[in-house]
Amino acid sequence: METKTVLGALSALAQEHRLAAFRLLLEHAPQGLPAGVIAERMSLPPATLSFHLKELLHAGLVASRQDGRFIWYRADLDRMNGLVAYLTDNCCRANAACTVAC
Image 1 (cartoon, rainbow, N blue to C red):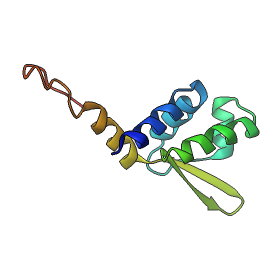
Image 2: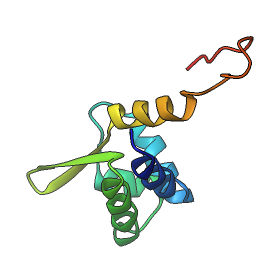
Image 3: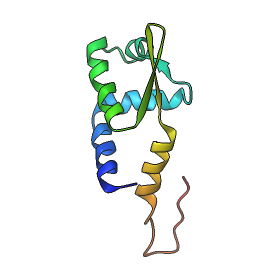
């Protein structure tokens, strides 16, 4: 994963509502949730949620699909795992005594 991609993902997650939405979608992976359910569970107005989901989409952290008149969102688990791998890639390089348990 490139540094620019990582920075975009971390920037998108560095906001309370976006982080909460992403965590909610992770709970419902891999199928995801419709936008209306996400808004209801987070107690956010639809326009506000739409803004935050758009930022997560642009960062590649979530994907969307149309199902009739509903838009479903799901966490992109491959992107999330790539982000975690990037962050832990050099973990404990200077100290072989520690281990990463992800």
